[in-house]
Image (tube, rainbow, N blue to C red; front, side, top):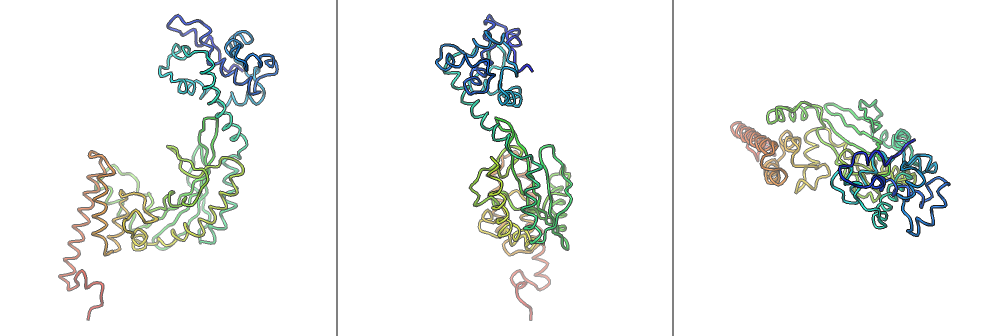
Length: 393
């Protein structure tokens, strides 16, 4: 199989670069492969000259390969690595590493065939190959999920969470779900194993989402949200959840934090059992007992009730509608303080033109108006704001 061909580059030169310049990047890959024992045995005689610097990979490419790099020019491992990594990543990484900000063929070919550039290429190829080798030994995400459910299902069931068929599908993740239902609430634990891209190939990770859905509070969140943000289309969002940052406290192993995935990284086979053991203990001792307590607005307000609010284990953002609405539904005595704290912090989180700023401001105004009207009604009925906490004669 053809991996790369210098001719495909020099045929598109717009300047008078020599044809050989179109093979510089290919030759650097070949040189690296020969010196790392990842080339075909036919190139063994090139090793001394490449290591001493008396020749370059580009020279070998044109002298021995007619400017074309083929899988037959590499060992079995070298060919497997090139097949997995070269076409999609090598040229982009080469441009980035050598600071070739122009994406034209001429800019690529203008990079010098020098020992200094070869060392730079060696560095990122070594890192990519190392990542690829680790990824090649990892289990599939399906196998990882099977091991995770075998390790964690007993913990879930002991806390009253039973396995449930998952309704989620993803091209890069496998999902298992556990639920606990009660009158007016649904608590959900979603366990996922996922793949994500690394420079050398595939990364593997585990994600845990712990959510609670309170029927009456969720309906109020949706109604309030639609008032301020008419384009809101879903009432299915969780009322509250245990943030990953809270769940992961105490974990000293590797983490994943990409645009798509946040979770616990499985960097090698040896990471799996320690991670699953730690997760089992963390779920049993902290996360599941915390989630079990959230069965209504009053228990959610109690879980949020910290000074400042950010100290609560359930806190993730001041932009949660469910946070102030839980305090309102629970008729919590700290509602005024909570609204004031949210009001102080929202401007520091959002740009002045962000639509959530006026939305949160409008919702807080409605909550204050409702609370003022409710307290006035209580006073009128002979049940003042303070007296409602005491039995009447």
